[in-house]
Figure: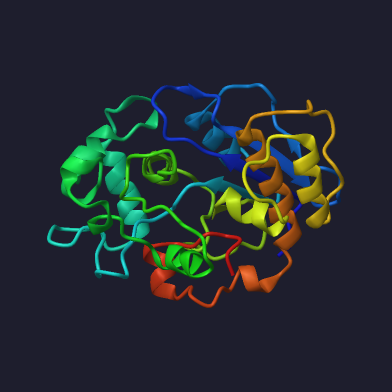
Length: 276
């Protein structure tokens, strides 16, 4: 696939309007090191999507969140209840139920579907609700430990971030892969998992220093970083390595046609770009 620019977003589901945990980085297709977009800026979730929706050039945007919930394992997102038939219907449901929650938060939606989410020991065994999508099962088979979107407690949980992002996915004008086909021109939005790109760069653990980041960038065929302090937070490191990683694999058809991605999975669960 041919793109002019690659933009990676490290996302968050934290409470509030603006967040240090959101970092945005970009890499040009023509080469050069990845760079932070507005370094030090506290992004809001709405601001990130406004940037995406205002883009007309050939940019691949990646956001570190899940674009769907598990469906294939039980034939529904919410077994035993009326359930949306596909991801776009799910996004609309999340957005509609959560409309009164400020800053694209989702407590109202969690309350609406409460019995399907795990928020702690009072909900019983975590494993009973920690369902995985097909892409997460594939990641687990590689020896990784993916989190379930239905688990909303713990440092590794991704559920709140993903649900908050779904509110914005419901309104974006930009095509979303793999729910939508790759367009011939203009921007495209994909789900990413920053850890996968760090692994492609041979990194273990968080990227919080220039030395570890530059080593991983070199493995992805990227020049070393520029203008960064010796140490920085892992959100910046995740965004930078992901922008470079997206650029490194964009022309490889394996990542656009992974073996486990069927039309039904594309429509209901989506897929993490970067996992072939």
